Length: 396
Image 1 (tube, rainbow, N blue to C red):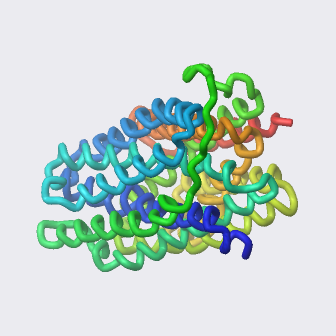
Image 2: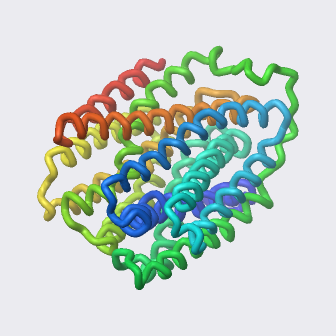
Image 3: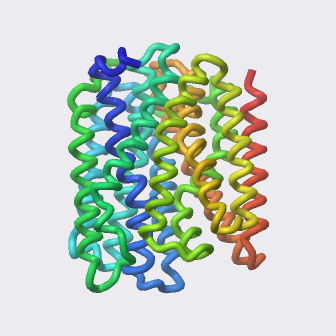
């Protein structure tokens, strides 16, 4: 691990995970989700619809553009340019969330949708860099270390903003939430700077058609992305709707939800790090499928709405897998692809993950509204875990 700490390319790559985790935790994950639904839209019946639409719109757009931009960057050696510009645009729109203009529902919807869109696009270029800066035997450990370090970034920014988000937003304290969003933007910017400076420019040019994707020639990677499509339906649902679930099902206030999330982050820091080490020493496949089995238990426990006293048990399980599965998935895909097409493949990884997440959220909401219960929709997501796992398991 020490060799990563003294490699400026690797450690700067790791710091981007540290930076962007503040966004994913506090903006779509908890604080802005609550602010958007309970203050911007004043607990209107349609507030969850607009929140879901913002996530859906940004996911669909990023799913469409990520493979194209990735292919383009691979062909013309523009990975660093795309990564830096798109990351800066993400930070700008997070900053816009702190402005008085963002109190108007239309602009709140617009700014959040664009922040989420550019954030997701930036991840495709960020993830693809792992093939450029790490040797094959380093990928699993580096991926786990970075994702775990990202949890630490989320925890750090959480502590910085805790006093801003400790109460439900209202007409008197809404400005505290705005200051919190501003803090997230500056946090993201400051800790992204090493990656903007030290990640290498990839000077690679290929004479290939932009729309002639290499993915169709790589059946193993294609199978993985199809399987991960089903798995991300579950993970996305849990990440983006846990705050609402804890608030509606258990009556937790924002401070209690943030504490719940903090526990998950702390556990995730250690578990994601160690999952990379274990996968490197033993078997990436075995550790990856173990996390899927834990996800199955989590979905089952959520479906039966375990007593409030057992939420700490749910915290423990979520902390173990919420970062590990995605980190190991990143390393798994990396092991199936070649370096010169990394931008394209990780662009398709965004397509797989976001399309899967969008379908999962949509199907869950549709089934919940038709059946007037959330038990069966959760069971459907449980089935998706096994479908995705089976498809990936068949990769030899």
